[in-house]
Every structure is written in C-alpha cells, then in structure tokens.
Image (cartoon, rainbow over all chains, first blue to last red; front, side):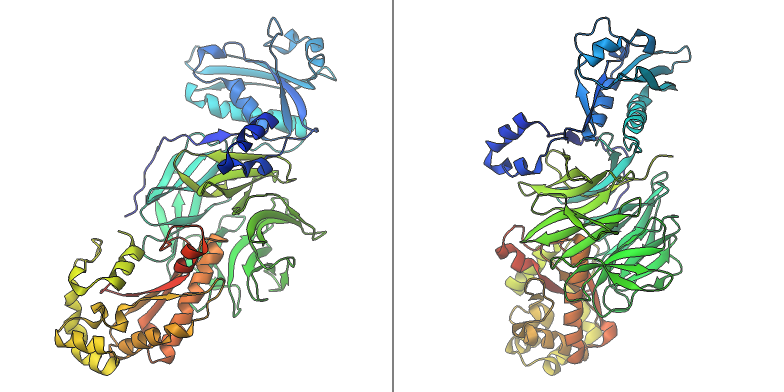
Length: 436
Length: 180
C-alpha cells in the first residue's frame, strides 16, 4: 500500500566530474570507462571568481562559502580561484585590495561575514565586487534562522550568478525524482544540489512521471498501485493527494498548463492512447487529439497556446506540435526513427527531447526557428529530460553499471555533472519552478 | 509478491502448488465456481483435453495446467503490437471462455522492454493489450468483459539488459478479475 512519509534523510551526493585528472582515474576502471566521454570541461569562457571564506563562518556547522562555490562551479559558467594566501582575509568591500585578486586572475571577488544577532538569528553579509572595474556589483545582509543557512547560501549564489552571467540563478530551486530501493518506489523532493531529500510518497508498486505544478505547490505523478496507471496530484504543503484521472484503461503522462489550472493527460478510455485536457481537480475532461495511433507525452508551451507531444501517426514515434486554438498539428522532428519526450525550453524558443540513434538514447535540443538539432549527451540510455527554469541546464536520467542515476548537461552541451545516490536507483527527474 | 513471477509460476506448476498472492484477495480461488458454472463452460468453451480433465475433477479450468486457459502470456516482437499466429489458439480459448461466462471480467496488462521513454512504453504496452482485446472480441468476448491497461516497462518479468530478457518482457498478461 501507499503511504505518505516526511523527512527521509538519505543524502543524494552531488558529484561534479570535470577535471581531467579525474577523467584519467576513471578510465582505469573498465566499468566506468564510458564516463570519460560524458565528461566535458566547463569551457574557457567560465568567469574566474574568488570566494573568500566568510569571517565568522567557522563558528557554524555549515560553510556558506563552500556551498556557494559548489553551486557556482556546478553551473559551468563560473570558475573558482583559490583565495588562499591573501592575508588578512577581507570580509568587507572596503577591506578588498584589488591587486590581490588581479594577480590571481580573478575577475570577481566575494567577501562576507557571519555572526549572531541578539534575537538568536544569524546575520549573513556579503558583497560581490568587480575586480576589473573595481566596483561593487551587489551587497546584501540577511537575518536568518540557523536552519536557513544552506538556503541563504543558495540565495547568495543566485545573486552572484545573476549579476555575473545575466541569467536567473536556479540554486534555490528544488528537484523531484523517483528513487527505487529494492522493491520500494518513492517520489522524493530535494534541493537542486541534491541535499535535503524528503520523501513525498512511497509505494510497493512503480511510481512514474512526476511533474511540478508551475506554481510549485503540487506534484502530479502516475502510480501503478491500483494495478493500472492512475494519475494523482499531491500537495507538497499538506501531503494530501487526489486522484485526477482513473478512467477505464490507462491514465498517464500528466503535464501542467502554465497557469497550474489544468493538466494534459494521456488516456486510453476511448480506445488507443490519446491526449485529453482535464482540470487540476479531475473535473471537465476534454479530448484533444483524435488519431488512430499513439498520442502521448504532452508538454505545454510556456505561453499555453500549444502542446508538443509524441505520436506514431507517421509510422514511427516523432514529436508533433498541436496549436490549441486552431487544432492544427505539425510534425517537428524528421531525423531518425525514434524521437520522444519533448519538453519546452522556458523561453519557448525550442525543446529538448530523447532521440534514438544506432540503438542508443540521448538527449537532444531542437531550435524552433532553425529546426536544427543538437545532441547534448553521449550515454546509452539517457531519458526523461527536464529543463531548469532558467533554461541553462537539462536534468535527465542516465545509467551507469545497470543502475539509474541523474545527470545534468548545460543546454549548450558543454558542461556535464552527475547526481548519484549509493545503492539507490534514481530516475525521472523533474526540475521545480523558481522560488517566489 | 511479484505479480509477473506469480504468473510465471502459475503457468508452470501443478494445481496442487497454487498459492494466491497474499494481497487483498481474501476469497479462495474456488469461490468463483458457483457464479459461472465452470463445468458447463468448459464443455462448451474449448476443445482442449486438459479442460475436460479439469471438469471431471470439478476444478477451475483456468487453473488447470493442462488447459490452454492456464497459459496467460502473449509475447511480442520489438516495437511491435502485432499478435503472432502462435498465440491465436490461446487468445481464442480465453475469448471462448469469456463468451461462455459473460459475468467474468478480465484485465489484459500490456508491457514493454526497458528501452526508450517510460511514457511512450506505457502507450506501446497499451497497444499490445488492445491488440489482444480486439482479437478476443472477434472470437466472441464482450467488450465490457475486458479492460486493457499498460505497465509500460515498469514491471519487467525478467531483470536483464539483453535481448533474452527484453523478449520476455514484451508481453501481455491475462488476469481474470477476482480469480487470479
């Protein structure tokens, strides 16, 4: 039976594999040799940044600057410069001697401090400085509970990332994924760096296809606990869940509309697997497609006006676009005989998907304007892509040694990272929305 | 208990070794007999000698390992939902049984091998289940008697990452509601 459990503490270890030395190390192990082709450097364009350990942070269980540095480095857009040897360590903007940092090749430097407040909260101050222009780019002071230090570190990383790259940071977001331990399945939610995993639902039968509501309050998923695929929506705040679609036959592939009011789903109740749209409370089901073949894996465009989906109407599974107002359907993929699982980029300018080529499955990206396809990954069974809310990273399910792992690739294909959990099969990642 | 493993055991073992899964089915298997008149069903339903044998010992033909009705799995080729000729006698036998027992309900569970998208595999498994249902209806089963569902690649019968395992996982399983 299915039960709802909170606070399952089992750290999901983030493992960033980007340095050449490590690549060589892995190459000596035959079972892991395939990893070498998966690992690509962060690129010469990464911005060099020095993060000076915050004054006073030794007094706290969490090293804020370690968390900030790991976040920024994982993005592939920034490169950490060792701040060692600078004495005394600056903690305030006025204490920074820019010459110390130009000589180390840093374009930016971060300084800060951590200390107790009279009310029991912790004061965290930080400043981001442009070493080249010798100006301050950002500076904030936070008063937080000791339990919020990690979240504060992610927020600081978001500010730094935004100031230096011009893109929105996603270090404060959360991810969901399905973990399989023995014969037990669980839907877990964790911070974007894999920390603080919490179990939303567990089941002895498979769980699949988790998707966040765009407002971040609920997750829709498919459970086989009733010996058939049934779609549920579960509130993250209360843990309460509701059956959204349990019609005769199979009910699967939920996809939220951008306003979180509706879901596109795949139902077989009228024969075949066809697309329908249903209100988020399970009412008002309406048929969207009418084909003799398979129509499934709907994904709403960010503007809500069209849906990408997978269909075999042309003889092999390919990606199509349905314009909701007109009902017009257009084929989007032509290369290869297996293109599935489309997910829009948040800017609506393209989509990622899974393509099979020569028996291997990889994540690819297609641009709507040019129709050009770029293959982003080099695994053998890569699937379930989920795009970060800033569009810069794609989280996906991969495989190593027969075990499911999560991996991420930058949407330009250059930076890759892996998220693994000991002795647990992890799959079907879903990146949550930006925190409000 | 693993359902597919149970189905595999069922196909192989003799009546005496039957064990129902310890899940929610509280009623013993034999409780089905009064509602459908098993003996009459078997004589009119199939031509299999095994079925007749079951009837004489008063058992359920669905549980008789000598009966074609004890065979509950239909295998498919890669990326295909075409029912192969070798399974037509099996499907016909089940269809005739349903035809003779209009109160009996069945679920056909479609499955796929581990390759490819989970959701597309749900749809592919659904198609495999629908293919068997369609054939059963041609042989006389009623539409309302058969619900088709799909587990996609989520419930493999055999763990493994080669064609040997995949071939056994691309399948439909026939489950009699309230009996299996």
